[in-house]
Length: 137
Image 1 (cartoon, rainbow, N blue to C red):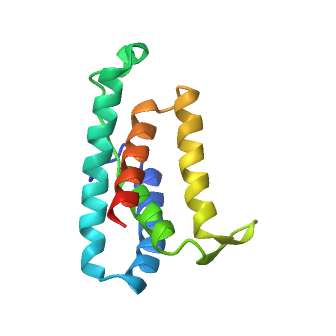
Image 2 (tube, rainbow, N blue to C red):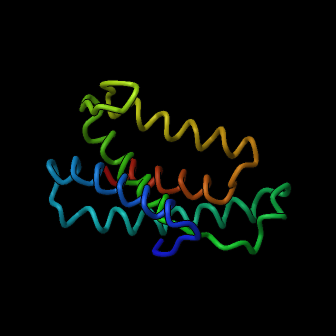
């Protein structure tokens, strides 16, 4: 959760964490954001490891490292959407969108990416973080 291969990967993860963390901090104690992030990252790692080892077609992904903060960030996004589904944010080039739709798009894109065998471990981790964010809220 604290290492990345690419500079822009950590940059966008931290920008997203800042934006969605600010929304969450308005409605819950700011002290709860760090545990949600950490538990989301851990849950994402565990889910990714379990699913990669469970499904027979994913042997190629066994032993690869799980790197990145995305599972923890996804937990924050989903926690925002569960707590405040009607909250509206402005997205560049799109306009005003409810958090519920942002969260659904994040989950949908991760499922779609798994189906395309694109960053399977990372997308399983995102879904694990999403599940934890949902359960915590």
